[in-house]
Image 1: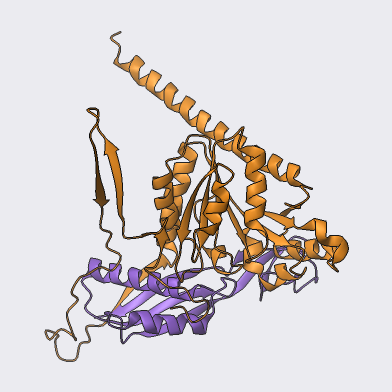
Image 2 (image 1 turned 90 degrees about the vertical axis):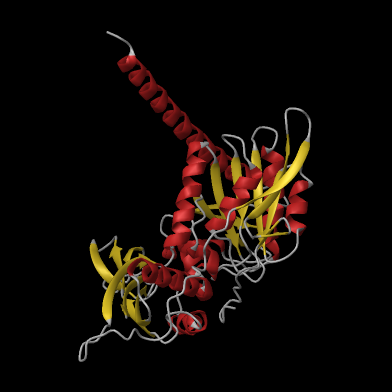
Length: 307
Length: 113
């Protein structure tokens, strides 16, 4: 277990199923028979190879066998490869994915519920929920009628791209969907883990203190948008909005800030407009790709035609 | 931060290299860690000690090479050294400074037999 934040490995669950890569599912055949089976695809995360014990005994006297091996690999390389695969998948399907990050209690889930209420009629969407334990958040999202999938990270303090890839397999989203990923409530660790999203969106509530962007700079640096939530409470608090935004822009000069209240609905229009803009962009990119492929197919067919 | 996840990724990289190159035992691992990467070096060291146990890198000495944070000051139009992400420009005292280096987390090389 991590001595700093309590990260643990091997405890991830998707919808209560252990993350053993053996997803059971059922098929119905054309003749009506249904059967279920599992697709086990073993990953070798642990390289069960035998490296031998102790030094080899075949060295020449006076010569050390020690040698320098250049590696030059990013420690997060494997996560980044999974993230790139997720990003490619979002791109190919015109899906707009956002990774919502915040400390616990910032009002992420309430904000999501209100967001879904305003979008669900016009937009295909799904929510991937990350929490250490319980299905509570996915259950709350499902009351809106939206598709939601819960990932439990066990002792893990963040979602990673591998877990999200499996969640996407399970969800089977429609083209041009909005994918809302609610990360584990934690302002530290999720900053470093790319999930393949288009943007990280950091949510800060006015009950938390305006200096959080300076206390947890990595997250505010990694995000493209900050939602300043619970602004309906401002009259009751000593929270300096201008100071908070100044701190946030110190850490990230390009950070866009939208002030919202999930309770009163204030500012939600601007947030929804930001999401719609992203979705339109993702969809336009997909259509461009499709058009380019169609043109390529037409060119190849023209070459095949006898002249 | 999430040093345990990072330590496990380091071991995966080391084991991958060992498999590719037929290494029996790793005696030293050198990592490049940027000062702006958010990694706590001592925590990473402890986590590496834990995950290396029972592996071919069990006895490996870990060297952490610090990569100094650098940024581009938009006011001075020059590259400056940064101690932290939110620091002002050390020359003119102004914000913002765009980070250009120091967020690295890399396995640089190994000494192995």
